[in-house]
Image 1 (spheres, helix red, strand yellow):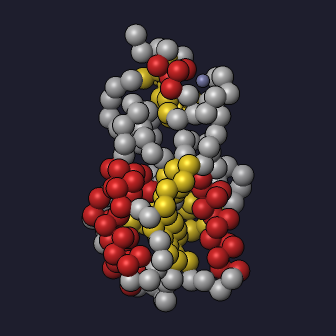
Image 2 (image 1 turned 180 degrees about the horizontal axis):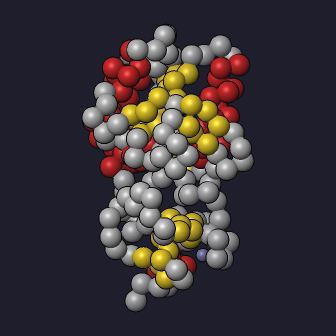
Image 3 (image 1 turned 45 degrees about the vertical axis):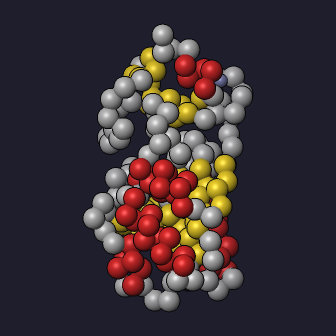
Length: 186
Ligand SMILES: [Zn+2]
């Protein structure tokens, strides 16, 4: 079994990919647990919802939740899919690693970096310990090159500093290439 990390910028259809994978596995008789770290509650706590309309209820992992305990309450889980995996803690990623070693397949979907271009805690640990890492590519919304940064906007201006996570804020995000992102940072 393997620990997979699929990363991409916002709008690269990571959630749709994760949900399609879940439905596909279930069609083939696998017992899948969908996990979502708690810090993201855009669509109501338990609901994982993609922009193209797929949705599914998830098990919520709070910062202090043990993933191993969370999974032990479910029946015979053989596959774990994590959405918004950047919000996992280092400890939770290490628990997922342990579960893979015990024979469970784990697929994590998430952002690699924040709007400042820095790694999230969960993404950092996943890059360190995953077996397979794959990029879900998408285009810069300004120029069409490959997008690598989730630029944060306050009105027309890109924001370059502040808290990593901005829950419920009014700021908007756009996926940009490095060139377009760094233009406003002078
Ligand atoms: Zn660009």
